[in-house]
Length: 229
Image 1 (cartoon, rainbow, N blue to C red):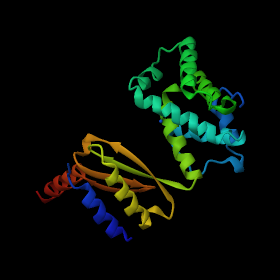
Image 2 (image 1 turned 90 degrees about the vertical axis):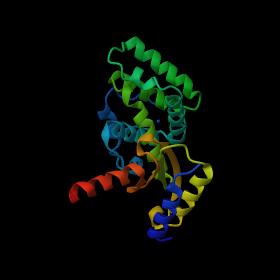
Image 3 (image 1 turned 180 degrees about the vertical axis):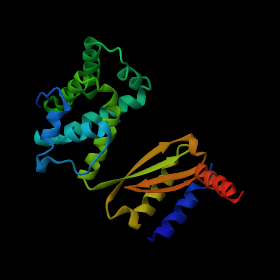
């Protein structure tokens, strides 16, 4: 399917309708591990959470615990979805060593028995020791990106002003999968809601963005009017 046909499909869909070893207590220990080529993260990530996610990926790969680490972080990501106050708690500057220890224990409880070799538990301790618990949600998200890339997947992120019907998401996935945007990779659909776009869709495939939001159209119109006047 050509990029033109994909765009037309997106326009139709956009029409208004009814996050086993003790880790060292600093990130340099992870950076050193990342130098090993056979455990190198599949894609480059940026930001502090990306640095830690990449370091965790390398450490998990070296201990053959990538799958269990991924499952553990997925469980933690669900906790963030259920508890909107958790990021505020983790970012609190007044956390004492005792507070951090209790937080790590509570997060470990949510992971259950799937944390092979306590890889994630020790990682959480490292975050706590370095006052970085506040980046945990970002680490969960970016580790998912690394695992997807390792599996040959590509994220298809669809942002809408309101929740989309599964049938709409399936049509969108099928349209992009047949297009040049997918690069022949398996797509992993991630649906997000952002009322600020006012309507329509913002579709991100890999490093490509197709912005068909109402807010973008209004911004273009305003710029056109400003330039004309």
